[in-house]
Image 1 (cartoon, rainbow, N blue to C red):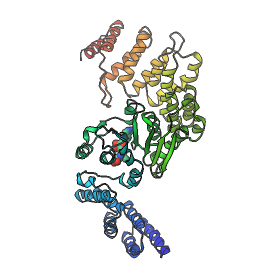
Image 2: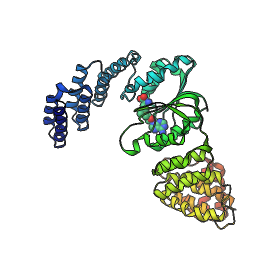
Image 3: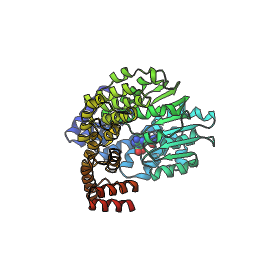
Image 4: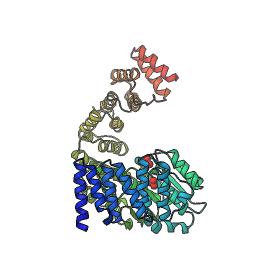
Length: 483
Ligand SMILES: C[S@@+](CC[C@H](N)C(=O)[O-])C[C@H]1O[C@@H](n2cnc3c(N)ncnc32)[C@H](O)[C@@H]1O
């Protein structure tokens, strides 16, 4: 029978591809009595992918009826009902799944969720994370909270000590997240940071957390960065859990590429507690930057964004040469990708107190291509350290002017441009700078960025404009200084 079940599924796939949905449905009915629960779910996915919602709903309802103690059946049905706008029933399905998973508080407290990306993983969380509750006031960190399902479970099951705390990093704080946290009764134990992970992580205390859950943006380079930045924040002995480790999809959505790179770079710093769809690591030591096998890590990928992320990690630990080499490799592999140029510019800005002629001969073309292609002003920032009188004084100016022409982040090039002009005795490049600035004032870009609130700069422009007999520019500049 197993063979004919497989054959029914394959025939149904072909029927759906040929637009014969009813035929696929008949095949399902033919096979249904012989299907194992997981096979039912596969059929459910088939109908959903084909947009056959009625069939998918009928199938999932039947599955839940036949296997009422199978949590996945209720999670699948709940997810489908949300997409069909049947919200109260969807909540009841999620609550049933959670109760079956040993989390009755979900229904009892009336949490509201539109997605359940978490509860299927509860057996591992119960195994590895829940025991933390017995160790006093747990300090937990979560990157990516969405509507707070994992956060609420942590509050209900792990953060039981009144001194326990949870920090949630979530750039898009939804009202459902706040409502669910309130319903947990432990909202005062939670700090919500409405920031991107890498902004927030840079400000959090080191050696502080017992648990970190990484479930934010799943792009490999972000997963890599999140893991690298999270590491120093977690105590030795603490747990780091990474979601969707084994997600299969487009490469840009698969954290595994970034996480594997992280594990290669941080070899010896962790123990793998459990590796499945999610990855559970225990921190055994801090990262020792000088002993990292970064060449091996670099050879493990040709993804320019990951190479760039690796370069960024090394630059953070002041391994400038290695970081620079990695940026250059990334640029060589994909000259159209902006990130490694920016990292390179940041490295120069932090690391090179002054550029030598040789550096400039090497980096000048890179800088120009970045500015020309992407209109970014960061290379100008890096090149601000060019020694006056070396013949390259105009490089940063050119970078800022081009960045202005490209319309991006225009307040930044404007103010940087002025700083450079000031440094250069306010002469070179003045007419172009003034023209570019006036043009921006008259045609502000649509990026919604306001003029920088820098009265000192506007007054300087006004003075410069007067010195170059440009009364219109001077008037505009002084007006800006007043606002
Ligand atoms: C898969 S959801 C998190 C699910 C949540 N842990 C739960 O149990 O339901 C991913 C979340 O990460 C957030 N996110 C996306 N990019 C992020 C970033 N760079 N930093 C932090 N969070 C991010 C998204 O807004 C989204 O809410």
